[in-house]
Amino acid sequence: MPQFAVLIYSDDSAHEPGRTAKTSSEIATCDDHALELASRATMTAAWAFTPRASAKAVRGDTVTDGPYVDSPHVVAGVYLLEAPDLDAALATAATNPVLQQGGGLEVRPVHSGGLVEPPQA
Image (cartoon, rainbow, N blue to C red; front, side, top):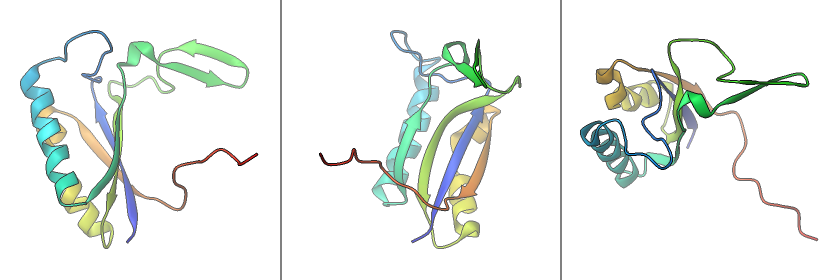
């Protein structure tokens, strides 16, 4: 089945190491949504990113603090969906609670790839 990457855009990530989340209800809503998608075998992988303050941008041989693009929203996470087509992926993505929290989503078909295994010696 085709795969689609869903990039989650928000004012920042609520997942900061060593600290409590922004609000437990905000995290719970997103966690409940993820559990629902996983239980339907629609979402196959997901990653939550840390806040923008922990980002480093690399351009050529220069490393700077912060995200690559200076924007009011940053990529807060990404997950993979399996769906029969883009319309179905968009319909599933539209149920993400980040949309009610002021954020947005980008849905892109995955061309190729997967988990990378180290070469066998």
